[in-house]
Figure 1 (cartoon, rainbow, N blue to C red):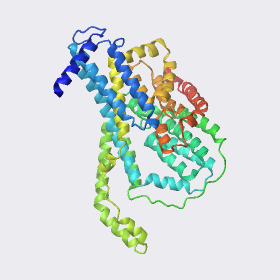
Figure 2 (cartoon, helix red, strand yellow; figure 1 turned 30 degrees about the horizontal axis):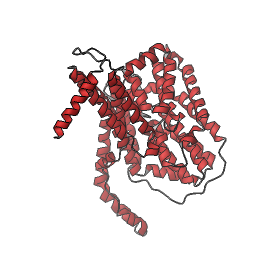
Figure 3 (cartoon, rainbow, N blue to C red; figure 1 turned 90 degrees about the vertical axis):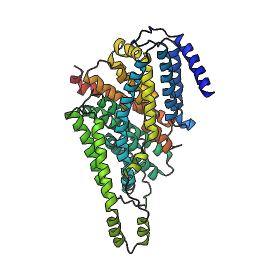
Figure 4 (tube, rainbow, N blue to C red; figure 1 turned 135 degrees about the vertical axis):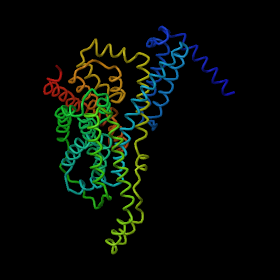
Length: 479
């Protein structure tokens, strides 16, 4: 019975979509479906799905769910239409191409997230939070310290993780001071996004550009000064609205677990391996990252084998401290795969959905149509600036993937510009970047969409200044 129903539905869909196809059905030719009912239905599916993503804060629906469903529906519809015209092989090849692009990014991000999860388990970030809190800084100093740290940590640890760690510091010291939490979270989001823009590892968008081979790893540093300006201008203006009061000191103390610092160096070695493999051997960066995962696995093996000896020494040292001795009983052996399980799977699945949705719309012909308008009829400079504005509304991941799928003919200066705008443009609104969305959840009721929107003109000033700085100091790259 179920097979009969499925057959009837398939026949109905085939009849509906094939009757509205506006292109040649010759074998081997891509169908132009941008003006067909098929295209409009797929576009509507994507718009509905992304509307649900934007409303994640209010719907409490994980952002991966709607885009995963949308991706499946879009490609099923495409496959039905192409099968009717005898071009199923084209759909299969296009789908495999999009899957390959996603898998490379998935494995790269998975290694990075595994290292970050391992550092969290080793309590490195907890130690950093308590250390900052107990320094006795006033609110204005904490505002600047957390912003500067977010700017310089995000190029390595990615903007999302960095923002979450710095927000934890702010929440720990602010108490009931909602205005300080709000303005500090805005500063952290801007700083983390700006810091991620000048590193191939700082944001998913920069990673996508780097893996495409459009910008070399060292060339991203041309965006350092524009990124600094993007962070400093709004931070300086906002700092005048912060009191010089000093928060209460925290009594808690945190001790890093064994191997935390060594894992930091292994992470840096992994990043270096990826850069060298890509730069000198012309291998995909993901190859270097997966090799670096082996560094962590072998170190985890060492931590596991040496744990009994380490516990024995600590029990002798803590023989007169029953509280510390009791803590030793709960220590579990280090396991790399436990940290892989703790990766941001919702983010990774969301990324899959976005890549496949945008890839499907590109296969239908929409990206080519948009590219014709933005990068042929418009000046690429204005198109790339608009990409940043769109990133604030739609999120920078689908926007950047769309640009890369369009494959516009641009010089290095323009590719760096679109990398900059896609990265920092998301700071204009709280929903424009993963860092902003995450902090709205972490500091719920204190950092809000409208609280961020109030400072949008100041952030836009930094956005404009960073673009002008790039056009000035990197003018030779536009030749």
